[in-house]
Image (tube, rainbow, N blue to C red; front, side, top):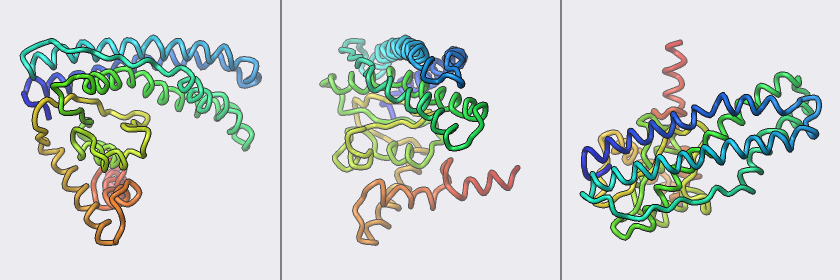
Length: 267
């Protein structure tokens, strides 16, 4: 966690603010979805793409600006000084457009082609487009904190901070702490160094001193090492493919069988 209590509070406030910011875009994204005519997907596709990329681009910028404000307050809390550069990575438009198109028009046509009713497919993909757009918007803030940490010689690294009740994948990444060693990079599937899934509640925090896991995070750390040791005992390397399923099977994370069984019993 942050070295100071105010820093930790600022990180949690920032995480919550970023989620609210992304969620606030939902109604705008749903209105844009209406542009896509299920009876003429190809004919309305370009107009929908223009609208969606505009929404994501604008709100990505807001997310980055919120992160810039957070960094100033966080550095003051952690270092007693506001100084330090801020690096705001640009939104990769080609990749953004491709991802939106894949979950939107392309997937809509595919679902209808597989026999799903046009109305059901339309509603299904609308929800998935909202989720994907939220993730893209929040990448503005996440990327700003991450890249600013890289450019800050005072920082020892950055780390992932969960919402306190993560899925197994997020818990695994949180357990690695800051600095992102070669082992941690392997666990994040290579080039995509710090992936986030739709509706992910995680954020990024710069680390200026020694990382001290919170009590909740220590549970994630212990779960990771238990799974990693089990993988080693099976003569397997420590990779996501060998560790993640063991953590999920033995843990009580959001996507763990034990957790789902408890929740199912309570319904």
